[in-house]
Image 1 (tube, rainbow, N blue to C red):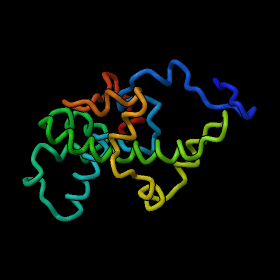
Image 2 (image 1 turned 90 degrees about the vertical axis):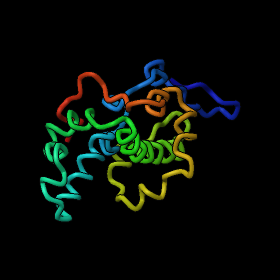
Image 3 (image 1 turned 45 degrees about the horizontal axis):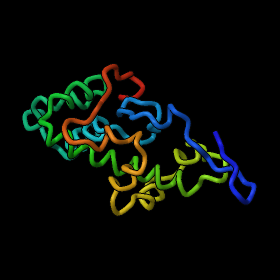
Image 4 (image 1 turned 180 degrees about the vertical axis):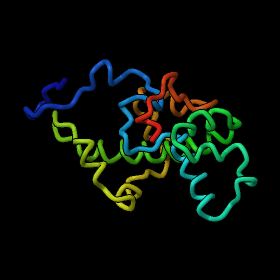
Amino acid sequence: DADERQDGSEEFQPTQRQRMPVDWASDEVPCSVRRPWQVFQEDVEDQLAEGRSADQLGDRLGAAHSVEAHAVFRQLPVAEQRAYAEVALQELSAYISWKNAHISGSQMPDTADWDLLDCDCKAAWVPDDPRYVLRADPRWCKLIADGPPPCGDDVSASSMQ
């Protein structure tokens, strides 16, 4: 939806669906933004690559397999889940900052353009206060709320990869 500005150009107006709060399993979160359990999974994989043994990783070893990462993540203490969620929130806020900077009239930027950026370019878009950026849009309120990150009840395999 778009409304006409005084200068005749159109201003982007979000649809009702775009105003609804979302969880991490939502397709409104671009696939290139890692979910908290994906951040956790990559952390476990990095620890394995650094030579940590299966004994040291214990129950977390299952997270090295994408099918099990979500289930293992949900068993972590809430404080640990939130720590991984903070990384995901930084990535999401970088995307939102980039998207907001690239809105042109009624034209929304293509998420595929964001997906093509390398990690350094994306990192340059991380704001000083990721939560401030996300608080500006009610869609993200569930993601920044206290407690365990809202992972969605039915997480598809595609969002766990």
